[in-house]
Image (cartoon, rainbow, N blue to C red; front, top):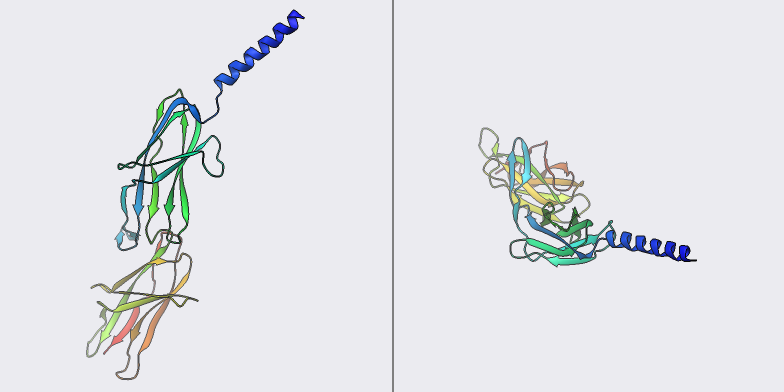
Length: 242
């Protein structure tokens, strides 16, 4: 009987030791996660060209007063705790047990949806861990794309085509009644942002081939690419100006 009681005691002792040494992720420990969040502003206002390709000119700033969420252990829907970034974009989770954690913050896309940006980290030996920086996005062009192109004009009594400086250009998605417009620059280049991805657009301008014979549209079709991309129209728009 004594041997049985001794065996039970030993089993209970080992079980307690194992339990105390293998705490689950969460609060109750000495670990700290300290990180920073940046916000990428994309309003599609400026398009630049470098190394033969176009890109939206975005502004990266410190993300202050943004929620940061933490998930204890394996990924699951929702979160276990949250905090907010300070004026310098930093956040902190304290008193964590050793283990794996998932952190995320939310981007605001043009459609109004929220998209999570995740980063993973592992706390060990009660140390302070600095995970990779979290980057979130905000702006009216987030999740959308753009089109750039060229327009030439032939003015009355001119001998040749020249860049269509300040000529108004329009963009209309096929199947939609909404129309966007812009003006070409001094090189005859036009640019549109805030367009739906993987969609076909009619790009056009007004032309008057014969004086007092009516206005007609000079148009081309261009298909946009993936989110965040900029497509260059392969065709030039030609308009007559009287």
